[in-house]
Length: 184
Length: 75
Image (cartoon, rainbow over all chains, first blue to last red; front, side):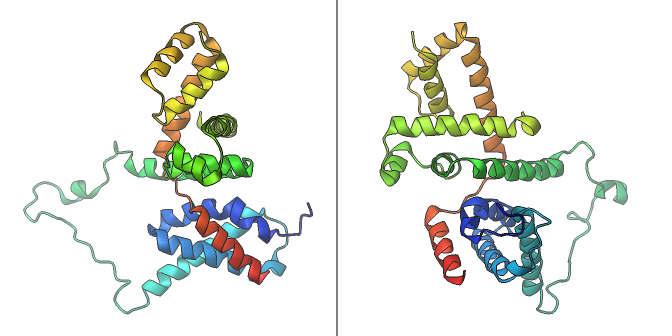
């Protein structure tokens, strides 16, 4: 593989889900995220000649997607006044005690950290899934992410259940190995 | 007695709550004397927990095919 060459024909298979997860975490809307991914691919194609090969394809596409996310928020905020942040300092007006004390984040709460960590985990899993052979990654994501029943998957892909379980097994072994360093 | 291959398949089914009661008993008995499968079961359960914890989304295959076609048109 040449370093300076992009392979747009493999983009959808390799990066679509990864970019989709990244986008969803930032716009929280399936349809918008889908459009952003699509736009990212088009933009990537358009500026393919500017690709110098210094970054990996995935990194390069993520950089484009980041711009697209920013553009999206610019667009929806372009109407005057919408960008204004309105916040209520206190939800209950007759709160007693120190104002500042009530506003600080609970130091024991790990909620924020958890959601950041979970997003990283999600992206790490997607990277690992994209390294699987095509058939395995398809079966695994249908079963695990989309939660389809064994019967439906078999029907759609024209395989038998024992075939499916073998593929699931191989996919899971590979994922364990892939996630091993960081997450187990 | 079941083989390790059978045990692994049952363990995988269990991750998707598709193992029957009888299968679960078989797996349980197998795990008592098979260290390897016991270890595998634990790791497998961990993987399931990780996948549940992470917000995972994937584009439906239909969408991907559509995207591929549109991308192909522009190449």
